[in-house]
Length: 382
Image (cartoon, rainbow, N blue to C red):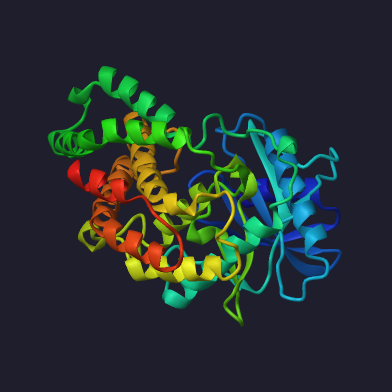
């Protein structure tokens, strides 16, 4: 990254700033994120600098949502003794806004949360348990946010039916001749494997639409790397990357977080054969979550197996779509990375399906009644 360019952008957010160091954060798939160390009025300090992705409907709406949530959390946690911090936005001095336009890109700055660490892959069951507590704390703290004040920042985000429709349009007109034989075969194998699922997914989506599931504020992308852990005590102190916060189902957040932490091989493993759904990790996460969040209420937690199945399927389609559409959404390091990501998620889905009966029984054991029909239905289609 051009040191002078970053220095110029930084100077628009801070007066009397001298750039010392730039660390690029490689884990994000959407925005480009940097940790900036600088001298501000002669004192060393750090902040987060982001180049915002062009996928968002409006940068102003993204930042309005971000500020709404961080302000709310700060006000709710004033009397809480345990550490919890939020990545507050920093206004740009040159325009008094939360975003700075530069060279056809839009940049923003936010506070750096010190003495924390994050991981892409869960280290042990204790971390899974603490992740569950962290997500429950976020949900509980934000449970009284006025949902009417939230803006939709990504059109049809977590709309599985829409991703299926996109896929059908893309695959219909896709020129497979432009792929080499090996890649072509990989795509065809994945499409063939998914074909058993499409009709059932649409049926399942229709069933869920008829359920009375309560809407709440959700994070939208609670993968493990978005949780910051206290460096000393190893508990979650922040849930970052708030650009996908929206009104939705708590089950979507739980399922997506479980999808992330239970793939202990990671989303880009060196060997795809190492990918499987870690059931113990899932149960430790749920124990942590329900140690803080009441499993009663109108959230239909018994539908969790369905939501895990759907969120993994959704991500397969999203990665595959992006590969077929020349990698316009997710950042890639090589041309076929999104195809590989889709294959990894399909391997995770296949492993999860074999463990649905065990998960269903375990949910029943902690007082959450699951849908026995789903257990048999989903295993009959594969």
